[in-house]
Structure formats: structure tokens, C-alpha cells
Image (cartoon, rainbow, N blue to C red; front, side):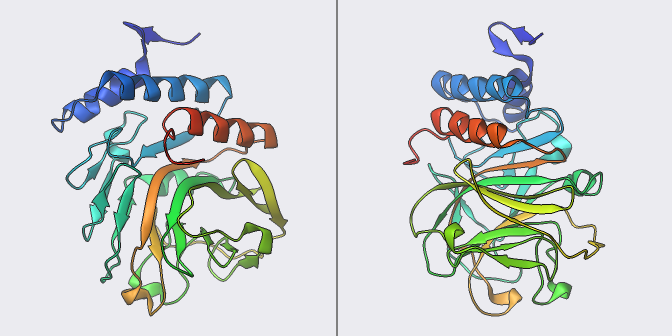
Length: 266
């Protein structure tokens, strides 16, 4: 049974209260998009066991350094580090720095180590060649040239865990185009999806992930780890400790692009 109060999902109301605590109120149409997305996630059974962050300015803070978690738990709120900026399409930065501009998502190391059956999903728009959009709980300057658990790049690479790299030409991304992407591990198989369609599976090499950093979202481009900068836009991040079927992956993509992904150009 879905819980609604005054016509909105209970989780929608919790999210709105979370935004209000930071002085932010959303418009009616934007609230409706969020409510429809949450309801749809429940209907296709991807809500439980997952955390969501909306990076488009109309659906989140739109200013400042806080990113409120859609699930209503403030311990998962994110923080913008080294000044990436809010835009209509998502959070952008083209600067370099040490560390690179990025979004650090709170409390996600607890999700990360509760299970190895994890799925990452996000939207990206790359604005320069060899731009790789990362999701990682392994980012640390001390890790040298091996950051990240999973990423996609314009050169078509997917990485799962440090030193586990697979290449799929069909996964290569075009510049200035939004994509709904996921990488993950289901049992003993590493996999990736693009716009709800399976693109690659591989048998991963077992490399323990031992650091305890929370997930950090960034786009990395050239140079040493300390010099890599963000050049692009990230619109949405989802982290889950569950496995999703091909149908769930497809339905989530369709749900996103008709609700909180409207106007991105899918």
C-alpha cells in the first residue's frame, strides 16, 4: 500500500521538508515530477535498498554546497567540494584542483560495504574528449592512478574496482549528449547499461575494496589525479545494494526521462 498525505507520497513530503530546512521551496510542477518519480520507483520495485540524489537545480537546492538526498535521510546528503556549480541540467564544473571539483555523497560507505551486488546509475553530459564520469568510494589522493569503482568515459571504458578495467566500444559516449548509465556487479558478473539497454558483461577479477571513503561523483580529464578536473554535467545519481533485471533497468530509464529527466534531450 502506497502511503500518501495530502495527495503526495510520504517520501516526497519528507524530501520537501529536508529542502525547507535549508530554506528551499519547490514549485508545484517540480514537486509533481518528483512525486511521480518516487511513485514509479516503487511500482517497478527499485526504491527499497536504493538511495537517490537529484542534481538539477529545480529539483534540489539549486545553490550552495548541500545536495539533499531524495530518500529523506539527511545523513545521506551530499556536499559540493571545490565549487562545482548548479545548472538547469545538473551540477557542472570545468575547473581543476586538488582534489578535483566533485560531489561527495554522505553515508554511502555504509551502502557500499553491505553487499557487493551494487548498481550505479547516473546521467552525464561530457563536454570534452576523454572525459570520464566517475562514481567512486575509492577516491583518495593517496590512491594514485587507481581511483573509482565504476565509470563510463567517451573512450568507452568501464571500471569495476581498482585495477579492474574492461573496454566496450559500443559503450563509447558522444560529447554533449545526455545518457542514463549504470555499472554494477550482479553476483560474479560485472555489467553496464546505457539508456536502459544492456551493453556489456564481464567476469571481474577479485580485487578487495578496502578504503572507507564515501561515494564521490566527478568527471576526470587528463593529468595526474591531483590535476584532473570536472568538465561536464551530472544530473542524477542512484546507488543501490540490489540487483535489477533488464526490465527494471529499462523501466527506470523510461521513468526518469518522463519525470525528473524531462527537458534533458533524450
